[in-house]
Image (cartoon, rainbow, N blue to C red; front, top):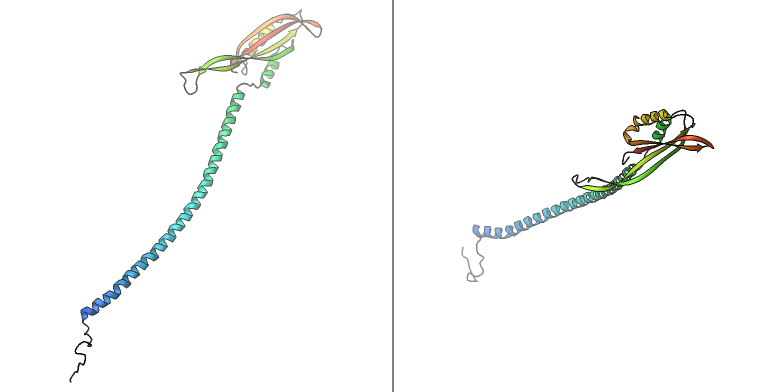
Length: 213
């Protein structure tokens, strides 16, 4: 069989070799693989970004919830400070007031039956006193301390001698479970007076409370 090459070898295609086929295939496959890998990374990145966005939304929701809690706590702390301030004011007020009902009951129960109550007054005087400072006990500070005096006036018939009754009355007040420990001193004075247009013998009993009571 004869082959006639009219183009003198220039138009005859080159026979394919295995090496050429491999090179040609690699030239096509590598870009495809790279594209597939890049697309895979792209999809993975989108998934990761979506997950992170959802996490951010969740964290923001938690932060908002915690913000409300923090504000509520601040509100409670402010109310606590107001209550503590009120308690301090009440405590300081209690320190300058006395519940007199038990005192009056004790006086009535121990007063001599043969005498009449003519006067019952409370006098209050303030004095300065040095006391240790709360946060520094070694340092003394000046404070105003109230001193109360319960003045009791009782009288009887001028012809009778009530010295023993008055002495017993004073002793009962000194030994009273309610008042005894609160009194610093009890002083008694006697004088003549007039009660309901009649002459009487009158006794004035000054019950001096301890400072600060």
